[in-house]
Length: 342
Image 1 (cartoon, rainbow, N blue to C red):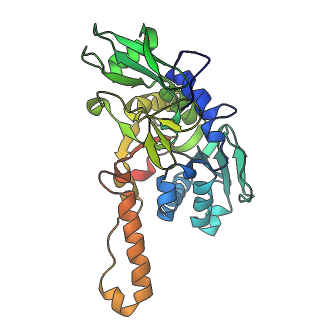
Image 2: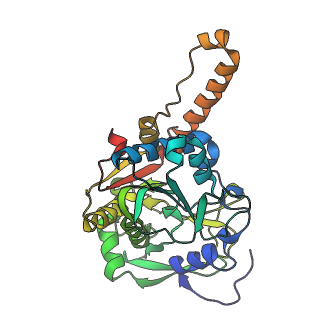
Image 3: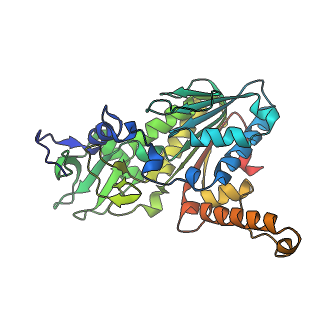
């Protein structure tokens, strides 16, 4: 850890924004997110296959438009978009306009069918899918001081913290509504206003179709008392230090985002009503169950049995209790019925 010679004290939102997305930021690195942590996309191709099936359901709900959009928000190095295109039926793939949205530059060798953007396109007709995006939208952090007052946490580049001004205005209102706390010294929270705004903006980009956010999440009745701010580097959890050397992440108040997204969808004249479910429930609805193949298959077709057994293991990891299966899925329909309820 290097000493911060500037002595600047900033809120965690500004500090993390620069550390992650600034000119020398963590997400500018050539290795991409996969070089530091493993998401569902990297765990198994079954995940991309499930997203492809979801896109097909959206396609049916839209009455098979001439152009069907797939937007991969926070695309990493395009792994999910590539997997979805490979898993789609040829007739659907021929109509898909694929967009990978990421702040880093376009990777070499990426499928030419994928358009690489730094911002989501507008007027989407199809599926916008944000896998582990919102947890990297920087948020302010609050902590209760010795007198029971929630204050803004300020941080230097070396990770040193101290308490700033008492929360006020929209931040205080958000905390009172979405993360109410006892007046006990040391209790912390991440203020989700920036995530709410980001998700509402993503939903507003969809004219007709579905917007999905998949992330580490909690709801009002399960908020952790000391927050979830942490760092990751080379596959290991580490202290969150806003110097560009590590990922900085915090779990998402998806229930608050859901209300913001529903408001954006309603403004667009859409069917309102977001839905929260676990990844386990969502993937099972899309045919990823983790069920073991019948033992008889081992005798009749050993190769197929081994292949099916490996797939069952991957499916089990994607849907595991206490692991990836506990991820939250925020599903927002825009002008169509919820395809995950079919």
